[in-house]
Image (cartoon, rainbow, N blue to C red; front, side, top):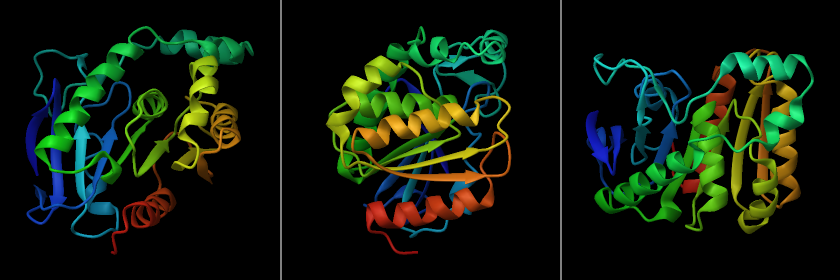
Length: 243
């Protein structure tokens, strides 16, 4: 594994012919969740069963919440979230306010991600049609928002413990992505992002014509083994890579 910069974002690259992103295989780009370090999802590249040609890029969010700590361990965010406010709205049943809101900083995160993907395609010599984009929690929200706004072809979209935001915008944009393969997973007992909101996200994307595979599990806010198995199969189908 090696650490690099793609655009304005830190990144950790693994897999491929040299285990550092070498070769010409497809690329899985993953975005971590709120308050996690840029390396939070790095262990997944050893847990996902796929071809050795598949390369992994783990992007670090631009907002560093713990300045002074090493990049590998400092908490980061794609945009700021008031967790307490979010939980209060959920408890009060004010769900529509949450799903309609376009978070402040979302557009800036989308711009940073666009620059990073441009650099990934150039530096790793991979067409956008060979890129599977995804993330966990806040990272999955940004991945989904980016995929709906951007017009470049993608091999697939991975939404791990995601939720619905910017609903009106997504409703208008989603039909442009009809046919895009999507793997979405969510725990039925997720205490942070309610399962019902994940269902709303699934329904919006499915109604727009995206090909959504929805994986549920009896757990909370995480990525259990069954989800990793589904992700392995999803990568093989969308990238044409054999294990």
